[in-house]
Image (tube, rainbow, N blue to C red; front, side, top):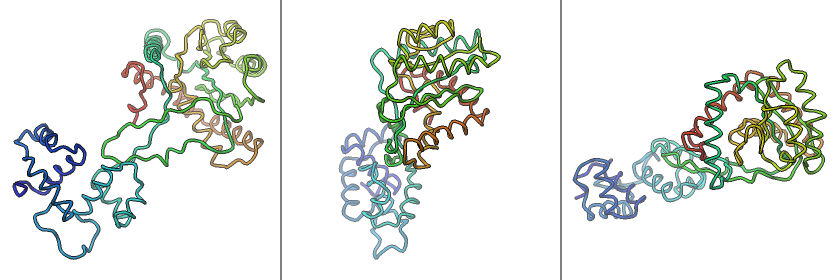
Length: 355
């Protein structure tokens, strides 16, 4: 009978029933958790019915209005609310349960409920994990056996689209639970807006370069030839540098690849490059997992109203990041741990390992 179980055990039984919605499954979970004979189905149903009738699993319900919101009844109500609706906001839960938000948050803390926000991740095709794994293993091996300072020699480059308003707000996508569900959101990599090119290395930032209209193989090559490479040639270690770009169509133009083969022989990453860059892998370049996110935060918090303001704020953000060389090097070095994480999941998504 239910009287053979203490309050904590009854609460455990009730929570499991809400999750599993099957008394026999609760019995199996009990045996796995406690290695003791499980409660009978009758006991499980009794505990469920008692709570639904009295709002408590105690032997005797309390009479009168409680003087505090921090009661067992409210604790169980809060637990049931977020088990059934983990995406419910605390404001809505507070209103529905008639519990002050401060008390609600204390109860949620007691239940060890934490807010988990989904990550923006890219979609992978069937063959992508194998190619990502091969790439990471190759780079890690090269760093270990041949060139320990490789990450200090790479120029990471990319384009990003900025617009005057609108981007996914993960602060409005909260999932309350006691364990991290590792939520993700697949994002579209190409969005309309002001297209900006930039690059990051351990020595700082290059750019921004703004494109008028669509980026093509021709205007991308022109930018490399007239702006980027002349700036890189001023560096004393130019012949040791590696240039990285992803597999975007303008980067794959034959004229672009021929130019990079000429300027960076055996030293450039890209689609059909000297070092093959794995497709759909923004999580492997600091331009995507760090740089553009920081730039966009700095830009959008200033609320630009015109395209010219947008460009000015982007330039300001580039300058600010370039001024922190320790940060630039730390971010570029962090690629090492990311590639190790990618190997752990055999080329799949690995952001959940970094929580």
